[in-house]
Length: 146
Image (tube, rainbow, N blue to C red; front, side, top):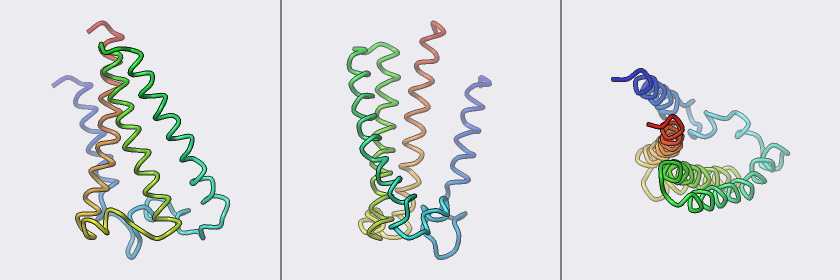
């Protein structure tokens, strides 16, 4: 196995370990355990900054897909498309976080139950970073001429 592949797998394993729901604090959602600021009231400025990020995030996703389509395939286009899909999953996750923070509604837990809802959230995190990482790796390989 190449060094870069081993290092990538090590980073993914580390991200999985620190993101896993078993490590969250007692009686807190996974989001609150990862971000202590999520425990503040929804009227604070920090909460509103979190909400204000959504339009910029979705605009960035739009331009990521626009850039990927303008590259018309190839290794750069493939890498950018993978990154754009990763960013889209991230944007939906951030929307979900804001809905849970402001309204206390967790879509994953409502649809899948507490355990499978947390597993779905964990898989969404892995999918986000996996797609983004694969996209960057594809662009890296093509920039080296491989």
